[in-house]
Image 1 (cartoon, protein in one colour):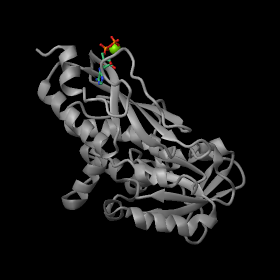
Image 2 (image 1 turned 135 degrees about the vertical axis):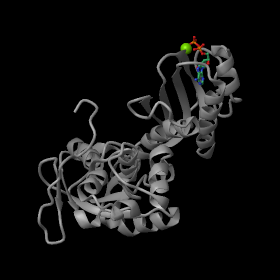
Image 3 (image 1 turned 180 degrees about the vertical axis):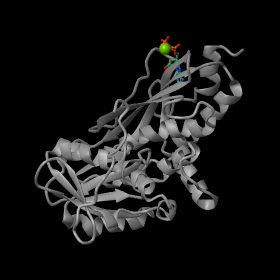
Image 4 (image 1 turned 30 degrees about the horizontal axis):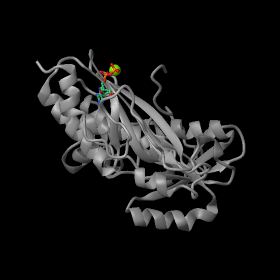
Length: 319
Ligand code: ADP
Ligand code: MG
């Protein structure tokens, strides 16, 4: 069987490009670009909790990095480096090779360099730390939303949660809708470009990982302000629009999670700039509501202005 150090050498070591020292020493050594602030985030994925134990390894390598890049995007940071701590039940080289392939393919797209990590034997789990750079004062914080700001959403929410419902036998899906939803669940696309381009445009931002309403509430609580969403303006992916189970579709849309879209607020003076940005990135950016004075709560209204009742806001590991 291959040893720990051979796994690291063979699958997780690439020549250092931007790091002064990458994989191989006791620490990596990094030189941030002059004047930049570091943005650092970590996210853990456990088999049986965040993914099925028999998940396709290349997709898992992609997703583990993608969810971390999404956090950098939500901060408006440019990704630079990553650390990978991984526990493997056994040294299955085919599995490790596929995992590394999925990881490095996404890393290469955003010029992220793997600079270190830890490799151990144990129940399958993956913990990635990412480091990015953002100019001071331009980071997209959660606590900066102001009353009167528009609330914007990239892409559309709900498809990943619908895919999960399908895999758990709670929903029917087939054809193109099934493929689209499964792709959203297994290989999410972090909105890295958008995050960087929103610097100086958005006032606050978060990535939608726990559910649209739950994550909007995080912005509202941090900013000490309320939010009102127009139910009809929330974008519906085809599979969500076509879903016959209305309660399930609503739950996926508003509370599903695992979306990795960016939810952000911006002054209404920025509307045309944001619309142009969406066109440039070929990514729908939709104005779904407004920040309002008051308690840090989300309200939802229909076209007639009547409140829309909501069953659940999102995901909480201890909820
Ligand atoms: P130490 O015992 O000093 O923690 P390790 O033997 O754990 O060192 O790791 C040796 C080198 O390999 C270190 O540079 C570490 O960052 C790197 N490394 C270990 N596991 C991984 C991994 N899964 N991916 C990338 N680098 C790794
Ligand atoms: Mg170690």
